[in-house]
Length: 213
Image (cartoon, rainbow, N blue to C red):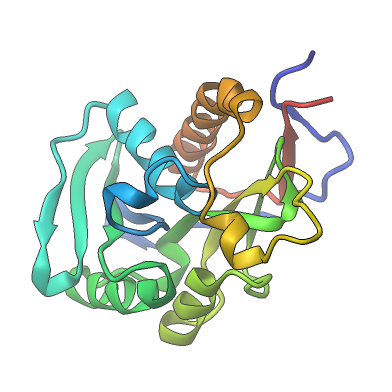
């Protein structure tokens, strides 16, 4: 079984980061719902991936910024100041937090990257792009409403053959299956790799990676 191989036929369209002097600043937003009852659910994979990235790069502990409606931590990696954010607004209002942070830190929309689940993509695939529609994700819809569509996305597939009789809203709030949970460490490691490449290359390719073939 191949793990997280790039699609050689992907269309690589690059979106440069906005630079301030000799130092870049990027805001990476993980989408999810705050609360223990939501931990381990499909809709919270954005939070899980951001936690894994923060741990891998030894960020400080998360700080609850109530005025910015988020949990936040930051660190300089190379010549890039990296701000990590997990909105505490609940998924559907995530754009409120992102707008506040972008305004407070004077971050251009092209410096923002959202890490989120996407039901339209099968479990086993991770796709990256800049801009586009919300694809039915209310968190992304909120971001588009508050900051516009021109931000980067790391789109994590969560569709594991949803039962026809099950409502989509219930499905995304359900836990991953035991078989899927076995692959989550590989998934979070690959997202960490994608985010690290993005920070150090200043480019987000239009790409697809898969670990289930």
